[in-house]
Image: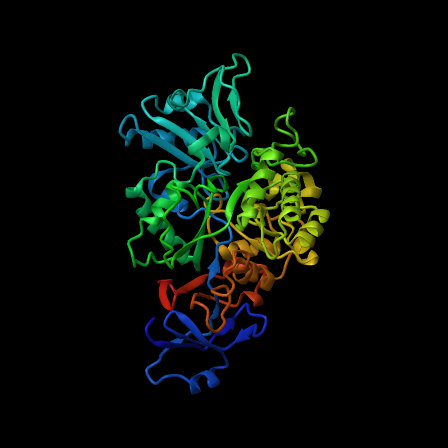
Length: 543
């Protein structure tokens, strides 16, 4: 189809283009959109050999754009790791279940190699804790056993891993991290918390070589396409990960487009000097913003808050913790901003966001720059004064709206309490303040499911069915835009994708029904076809 004109008709086209919000037909020419409008007018200008695609009364929208995620990590989980996810995502209810699954993998793994469990959540299992060093030693002392938390911000290791790292009773905690210790003996208990303490074991490409990278890539690509996503994101690109992507053969189409966010600390060496990355600039993989961190995760109470946690796990740190000291954050932001680069910064807590906004404001005072689009990633508990400040500074935000479903009840009961929990992912407040925003799943923390994510933003229902912060609900159209045109805008791609407009890439998702007509039950809507660059790349065989 991609070499011919094609007419898509007999359906509803939600363009996400404010100049023509709804159309009845679209014409594509190769991988680009040629025209959008009324079917009769488009037919009049159609070439005789054009292909016709009957939408059969379904709804076409722009393909979804992932505003923040870790492609292809979900593929690595499918193929190479042990899934320990609890409900509502999985069925790992307790530590014993996790240990049995790890032991089964260890029995099938050569001695001396790694057994890695993922998606474990201490707040959702019966014991309300991470596995201990002793329990993981019970799985195996002939393998490196490593269990990483669903948030990606801590993990538990057996003695083999701790010995490899040289972690012992006398090992000091690194800045922005800590090693768990037995309260009686002071010996390491296996817990490793914070990115600085986990080191390379926190990277999504941990244990992934070139031989494993591409099978994981392909598995993840197929999952994303089945959900209507044609533009994915790797939001923590190590140099090794960049080199894996850079190994794509010249001229080869990988089947999906990717935005890569190199780790901010890699600059300026990544861009200049003798060690600069020799990036091929192929048409499918694009280098984007640089990624920074200010704090941790709510599930571990390491997100950095201005007010204490509702029910603190650790009385010694009731506000959480900062991953990056203010002076270092200011230096990183100033450096990247002065280089003309865009910044995406992980800020879960409002105190972490305060630090970032202070750093951005200082950088703008030193080096004024229009339309920088620096972005707060997650922004779970943004305050009203922060929204106003972000609007003034030109700062955007991408909300981790899936938290409402997966952890909303625990935000309400444990992490934040009823009042602050009602404001997690406050998209309506952002809209009111004129702060442009997107919504994301942060895959693999939660699975890439755009329609479910939109359901979370529109209806704000937790896994138990509780409505969390009704006043922060947004319209279906706003949620769709947050995952399409606004997601494109947030990374300077709005001229290329994100809406069904003439000249843009012919990337579409065809939905089983019109989501605008079913706002209360968006989960019943599904992707029945995905078109990328004019080619059909997914069709639901059951439709």
